Structures are given as structure tokens and as C-alpha cells.
Image (cartoon, rainbow, N blue to C red):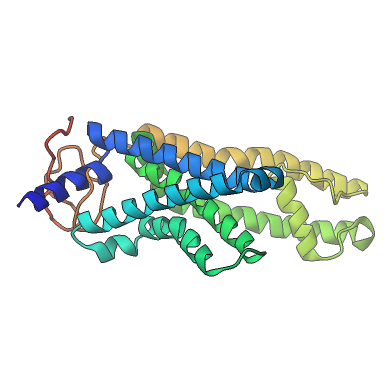
Length: 275
């Protein structure tokens, strides 16, 4: 009985953010993530790595143990551990700690460089925490509601880049650096997105005219996705409820929801939840 109460309480702390304990847990976790990322960055500096190798290694393992305990705790408190383990967030969690343990089976050498790079995957934990904030949930909802429009826009941009790149290949040719159609499409994408590396540029009058048109078109096209998301922000209802279903881990419930809209499981509000 006491174990079930403790498990329930721990679930509220780990998976909920609209309680005092849940907010504290998120803040501490975020701070730990940032420290971990800072250690990875410092360890990549040769002079720091040589001088503070033992200290950095010790701190790295302390953080790895903390993440491991958190991962095990998440599996223990949910009703369906398999659901969490194979979810996108569960996979991110395991990828954040797995490289450290894999490093135990490798000797000191070039292979550890790959392990250090994989450790940087912990930065994705910061993105994971966005589902526990109102702004993050609203942004995710806005992007999801406009997914078809954004997809059509991306297809349109790629189509325009293909057409423009082909035209530029025919106009400029190999002498101007447009050696083939894929290279010309690359130039069109770079120009449309207003990046402008300058490694390839048209030299003929007609080519420069087309390039000018592409530049103006690029500025116009960049405003489209921003306008879609902004309009969705205005019309989308902000979801203040961060309740996470223990059974299916669904977390997009209405403010007054008492049962999970996905699986029907009762949503326990917890003892210290602030409404």
C-alpha cells in the first residue's frame, strides 16, 4: 500500500509540471542537462581535456548515474513500461545514457571520439521538456494543425528550386560553374533561402536577371510558414492541462478532463496540483 502511494507520488513528480514538486524536478533536470552538455563541450577542448580529464570523467559519470536513475524511475512508475521504453522520449532517454556505458567496453582511442559525439544527444532532452510548458505545447499544436499546409509549401519550394535550377543550367552552362542540374538546383535552394554562399553565381545578363527574381521570391516565400504558424497561434486554444496518462502517456487533455481521451484511464489530479 505504501509502495503504491510512493509510486503514485513519484509519477506525479516526474511526469507532471503543474505541481510545485513537478516544476522543481523539471528545473533540476534541465540544469543537469545543461551541465552535461557543457561538460561535453569542455571535454572537446584538447587543453582542458588533458588538464581536467579525471574531473570531467567523474562529473560525467555522476550525471550518467543521475540520468540512469531517472530512466529507471520513469519505467517503474508508468502502467505500461513497454509503451514508454519504445516511445520517442524513451528512446531519447536511453540514447542519452547508453554511450557512457558502451564506453566501458572500448579502450582509449579514436573509437571514444564517436562515443563523445553521441553523448551530445542529451541536448534533445531539452526539447523533450518543451511538452511540459504551455508555450511548447501551443507551438507543437500550431505546427501539427498546419502540417498539411507546411508539407505542400515544402513540396512547392522544392518544385520551384528544380525548375529554376534547370533553367539556370540551360542559361549559364558549365563555363559559369553550373556543371549539372543537381548543382544548379543546389544554387537555387541556397538563393531561395537567402543563404547565398557565393560559391556559384551567374555571369550572363539573363542569368543575373533570373537570380534577382529568385532572391525576391525567396524573401516572399520565407514569410509563408511564419504566417501559417502565427495565424494558428491566434486561433489555437491554449492547453493549460499538463496531465499525463499513466497508461498510454498521452498528454494533450482538455483543462477539465477527468479521463484520458485516448484510452479512457482516470486522470488522478494528485494531492498538490494547482488548478
